[in-house]
Every structure is written in C-alpha cells, then in structure tokens.
Amino acid sequence: MTQYIIRRIIQALPLLLVISFVVFTLMNLIPGGPLAAYENNPNITPEDLERLKKELGLDAPIHERYLNWLWSVLRGDWGISLVTRRPALTEIMERLPNTLYLSLTAFFFALLISIPIGIVSATRQYSWFDHLATTIAFLGQSMPVFWLGLILIIVFNATLKHPNGGPLLPGGGMYTIGADFSFEDRITHLILPASVLTFFSLGTHIRYMRAGMLDVLHQDYIRTAFAKGLRERGVLLRHALKNSVLPLITIIGLEIPGLFAGAVITETIFAWPGMGRLFFAQGIERGDYAVMMGILMMSATLIVAFGLITDIVYGFLDPRIRFD
Image (cartoon, rainbow, N blue to C red):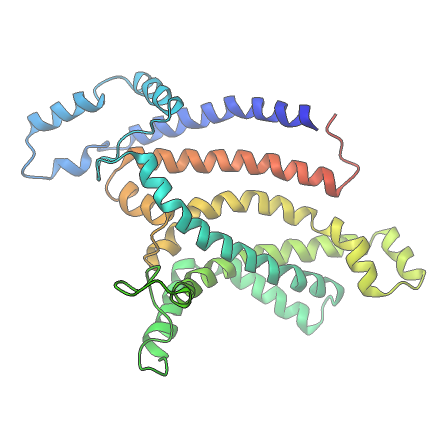
C-alpha cells in the first residue's frame, strides 16, 4: 500500500505540471490580459501600462512567464493580487475556512439524507417512495442553482416573516454586520446557501446509491442470505451496504474538490465570503490572474489528491482490489 501511494504521488507531479502549464497558457491567451482592468481608467496613461507590464514581467514570452511563476510557486510565492496588492495565497487562505464551513456542511447533510433514501428507494422499487425519490433526484440534477437560490431568498427572506417582524432567514452574508458573535446567527445565515448545495448534491447521490443497491440486491449472495431467513435490515446493513456505496464513493471523490472551488454561483447569490465568490468577483470580473491561478491549481491538486484517497478507500471496501 505504501509503495502504491508513493507511486501515485510521483505520477501526480507531472500531471499537475501539465495542468498548470495548460491553465497558465489559456489564461494568458484571454484577450485583454491581466491589465485589462486598467485600460479604461482615465488616470492611467499608456506609458503607465507599459511600465506596469515590465514591472510584472508581462512583456516576456508565455513560456518564460510560466517558468518564473512555477519557480515562485515552488518557493511559496503565488504572486501578488492586482486588485488588493496583497499576496494571492493570503487572499485565498482567508476565504478557505468560509468555503469549508459551507461546503462540508452541505456535503454532510447530502450524504446523511441521500444514503437512506437510496437504500429504501432500491428495496421498494417502483413504489410511491421510489417514484418520489426519483423525482427529487431528477429535480436536484436539473434545477439551476441560481434559480433555486433566488426562489429561497424570495420565500424565506422577502415573503415569510419572523415573529419579531424581520425576515424569517437572512438572504445573504455570513453573519449580521455590527452584531456580536452568535452561534444562532451563524446557523441562520448558513441555512439557505447550504440548502441549495445540499439539494444540488442530493440528485446525484440518490441516483448512484439507488443504482448501486439495486445491483447488489440481485447478486446471488444476497439471495442466499434472504433464503436463509435473515432479517432484511441485517442483510442490507451487513452484506449489501458496503458494496453498494462503491459507485457513490467514486462520485464523492470527484465532488469534494468541486465543492471547495465550485460553489461560485451559490456564494455569489448569497454574498458568502468564500473562495467561489473570490474567484468570480475578484478573479473573473476584475482579471486578478494570480488569484485565479491559485484557486484553479488548488482545485486541480485536490482533485488528484481525492482521486488517490478514493482508490485507497476502494481497496478497503472491496477485497478483490489489489495494489500490487
């Protein structure tokens, strides 16, 4: 196992290098470049732009700029934000805990809800519960995130009222500005954005859990267990559950990295101060290339890392898998 992990880590290094080069090249081929935000500023002259290009090394060829960026990253320097003039890594690390707080909460509740629904849906195939679960899965996968977010804001913030006369739930932000720290205040601000992300994940989780359980229930060893007169709950939990979650683990391994940086729309709609909002508001809108590169490379690293973790978990759950 140790040799397998070391081998996979060594294989991941050239993969990350290729990803970083492709992302860096594509970003620098975007029309306008990192200084596009300054071009329409009447206080900045063309001479100032040329001077900035030389100071930031933007007048050099792309391959030379990439090597300079790579060498800086290896020394722990992810560049300077063109918007705030602060280190890009500092900007990202300040937002990371907020994104973890939101994404992991949604991920936990998505698993907590989807696994029991998937199991019951498979064991009661074509029942009213199965049709209801399938409908929820379909809605979760097809409903646009921004539409659901706006609907929740209209219903729970603009329409329904709290007994004290205010909105039932906050429509944005992570806490009430100017108020003292309160656990209840943080939870109420978390409910709506976490609900959107949870519902978005539910569709995929329920479908894969149901399909995995249906496949296992038709195996001979499950029929044998039922033929011996074992109770349904014991067969499902002791014999079927472990094998039926294997397809779901694959999806989770790909989903977790996406939750860290992919909650762009949700964080933007609810003004949540996380990495997704930083990527959209500061990276895309204002052309902050250092921040964008940092978030994209952090996402790529997480995808590779969770791919390795998924393979290891597979080995523990399925003894047929060998790493030799």
